[in-house]
Image 1 (cartoon, rainbow, N blue to C red):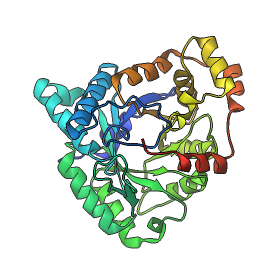
Image 2 (spheres, rainbow, N blue to C red; image 1 turned 120 degrees about the vertical axis):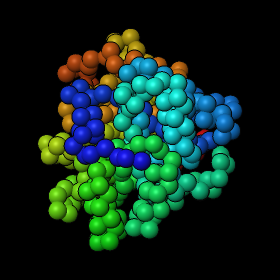
Image 3 (cartoon, rainbow, N blue to C red; image 1 turned 90 degrees about the vertical axis):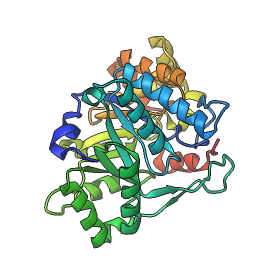
Image 4 (cartoon, rainbow, N blue to C red; image 1 turned 135 degrees about the vertical axis):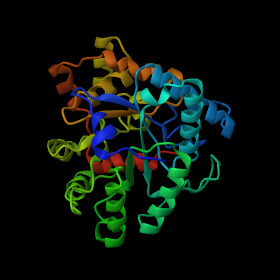
Length: 330
């Protein structure tokens, strides 16, 4: 595999303001995911069934002009599914590489669910040099290209910050031409963003941050604005709050959606895309139909009054993350 230089493909993928979409694969690479039951997962959740669904979603996404695919080592077999889709696409289309999407992946969590929807534990987190090296080898063997490699779910108290050997290994990968990023979770996301973007090993370590921002959880916004001013690429995830904004839309969200003649998911995603610090909004469709519903957000332009009305939906970060932790794997 020959990763492209940080200054080449990755930064040319940074779009102008209003954020563009990326398609995430958290719900596609394994038979269960944390959600409220809003996902349209297929009845056939066998490995072959989920591979077929992944390919159908990625075909629909690229046909709609989405040019970024995000995956992770811990998303079951998602890297494998994306890699197979890429190779199949290249066989069908000799010019595929000229318009193929940017691909980002993550390390730090290992999938341990053994394709069991009722597994007691689905993933295990470890931020160590051994884990990084092990998972990077696996990622390189699985994906034809990786343009951005992210630390999965970095927290402010992660051992990564004080692990000189791990930081050196990450810097070596950066220097080899792979852009590095990190994702965040939890009520202290903002502190994590501020601490991580200050890491410097003969140059800034991270080029991108992926954080949870949605109408219910907005606490990370000031830190993401600071990251954007420092020219980190900002991606936001979980913009539908793991389905809560679809199955349990607050009255204000319903009212704005009705005024615009769309479903609540389109308004929630449009609100994320219109945040001035956001470069990419991750869509997490479980099927082509859900992707089409999400993409209705492309034509939604929220007014200042709409955004002010929606701002009242936000919850305290601690409450939001406690609720999220209680959501089942379905």
